[in-house]
Length: 304
Image (cartoon, rainbow, N blue to C red; front, side, top):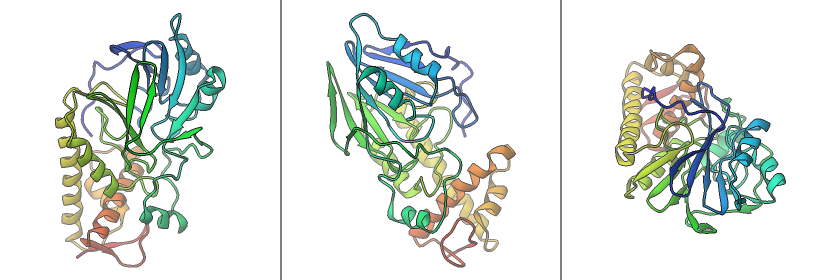
């Protein structure tokens, strides 16, 4: 985790202009997993798109509606992924505005084959909170464009943090949601998150020339390439730590997390354990490690 900037502390519920036709409203849900809270973005000048309306919060719903200036309305509600800090307010906002909800799909859309097998074997999510009842009015696919009045957003499927996760490109700016954040590395927690998919999506974003990333939590990222390089290097460092630790013998994800995340607060160790397991699944897929029994979150793994 990188040190979050001390100067990012915007007022909750107040719109801030980030660029022409781009405003941000911070939701009132700060936590160790969400930093100051979820960033809701409003795109356009007349008929607006709302990106990630956020958690189920009546106050945030009213804050979003209060940003509308004379002559403005909400025409699109776009959800980047179905964690409970991003998608639940979509339905109430749709009811109030009549705007349709656009997303990649429901909670299990985009889930990789190995994660589907783990889920079918009984592995549940790691407590990040899935909006299990979410279904969009309009399903979008990778490479499609969502167009409105004076704006157009290119859909980029970026699975990894969650199978149905998308990023949205507005010219050379990209709304990266929880795939790339400025205050911490993204959580990848099986069976909802898949590290193999995550790294592929990172490389795909790195191949483009971006001017700025607008993340789901935290301040704008003004060095997108540098941030992606750090994120990729950070994951490769974790992989190397796991492989070194396994040289001392078989170990579980929990054992490895305790050895590696020595400065992590106890409250976040379960999330660290999920991250380690995500790496172990990725390494298993690359034939670098193997479980002593069947692949599971509690299995011991050995280095090959």
